[in-house]
Image 1 (cartoon, rainbow, N blue to C red):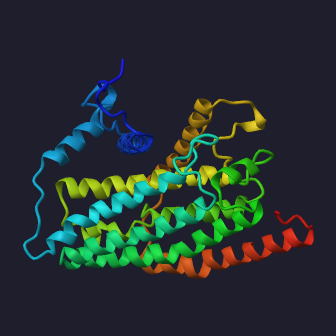
Image 2 (spheres, rainbow, N blue to C red):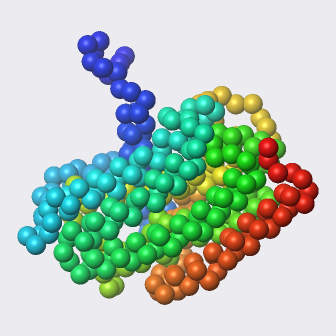
Image 3 (cartoon, helix red, strand yellow):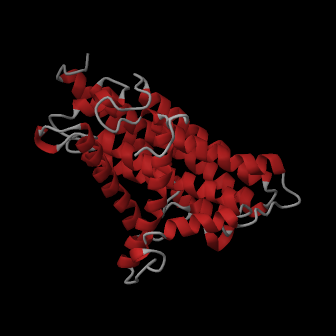
Length: 330
């Protein structure tokens, strides 16, 4: 039975997609807390619902009912708009992600370029949030985040450029179909390790969570935000993690393709994509529970003196191989 009457407008594919992403993000927070509790020999959330399954709804309801405290010295308009900007940009990237063959919301030939443009705009919401709060802790956190995001955009783009050079396409569908013979993680294993380090920094995750270092910056750029604006930042952070996990699956793990070229259906392909992305998200949690936070100067040194030169070297090496063996994509 439908949940809407005949006179109501049926929810569009875009509305269902946004609702699905927000629901996935909510249960990602529960999964992270349960996995980290298991790694640290704790129980984790287990009170609200069976085995704590309803904990994300309780957290969301708490943030929804809390009073949004706006500092008197803050720029109120920008202070309230910046979380919305950050969350909107985190969700816009899903428009070009193919969940199965031919099922992307916007199947455009320049999907990779669109996603890179959207991800590079995310720094504006963070910078505006830190500046509008008129707090030194929030401002320092936003400056750290801006420097981190801008710096790690370069090795991120370098890795994507190498994959585009091999596949000869900026379309996610064609990149996935290119991996029917072999997943790109096998010939590009060293590059995939560079990619994983970069996406940890791009999503402000441990050990690169310097913008939210509670020892010196309390909660970083969103220290003055509370209630629903804070929830927007929280959803945007985990939405970016989910997006990067799915992007890793598309670029290196064959996306929605089954191993060994087995036949599939759109539902099975979507399930395979979800399982692969969940495995990448598990590595996010594993790293957070294992590694300590690095210093900010170490963060910059890793990017400019290690990851970026490795990316340039791999790019030149890849082009040399493609030209030498005359296997450049047409």
